[in-house]
Length: 155
Image (cartoon, rainbow, N blue to C red; front, side, top):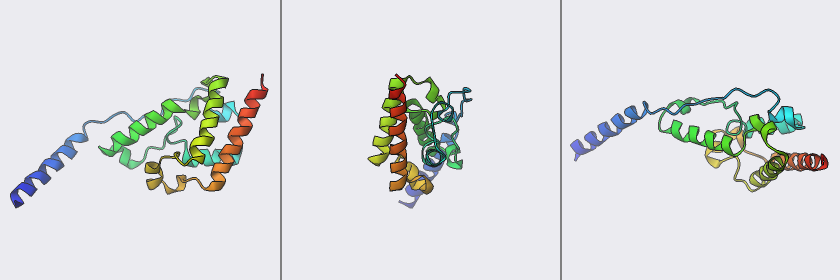
């Protein structure tokens, strides 16, 4: 029995070591000038603070890659979450979204943060400072509503 456990432990270690060679690319694509949220919308310092603390790692091209994003299999999950987050909403590309899509995204920002589904609990488990307090949710919802009104008034 002890031999089997030792063999299993060695196998697991070899698999983990081998997994380090399967490395998806961690990237921060260059930002297009004039396309970021800060350049394309009215963002107060308070809103920027909440977004930078709780959203930008997964929803911008300015991801601060943590050390564990270099270690498989954790790296696979982190990189996949960032890619998915950027595909869904990328604040670095805000200026490239049309007005209707921006309005939908702004509505979604309020709905997902108010509902507690964003930021992901797997992210806030490690990044405790990213947790949104009720005041943070109110700030984001008020801002997203004001920004939607600005976009609708631009007709």
